[in-house]
Image 1: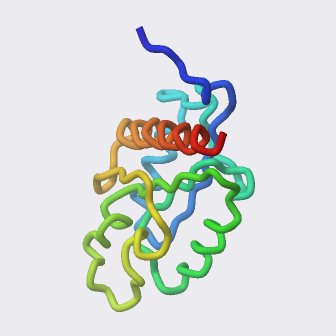
Image 2: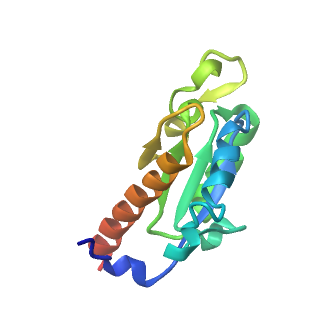
Length: 145
């Protein structure tokens, strides 16, 4: 029998940031929030401001023009926060790894807590990544208390 943890007493809000992806991961994120998977029944939803988010979903490699914006969004998030890198491009640069306009993978710019592999990752993998991020967030909140 699965037992829900204390952190499920509140909603888990995620902010999505595209740092230069091909939009393949975005299509899968949209698929993951549709009624087929319905993460809102567990209180997981996308929000429009990083100031309200618990999780930062980052897709794509970090292009030079997005580096400052990504750092600013990360700094705007309240603590405790968890960063989830979605897709192969954000993890390693993917097919763009040696491109002239990249500042590198996401973990070269901000600390990453959860990696979701795939090009693009399936909605099930993204939801699993959110569950892992939820567990990490719960540990961080336990350390804070």
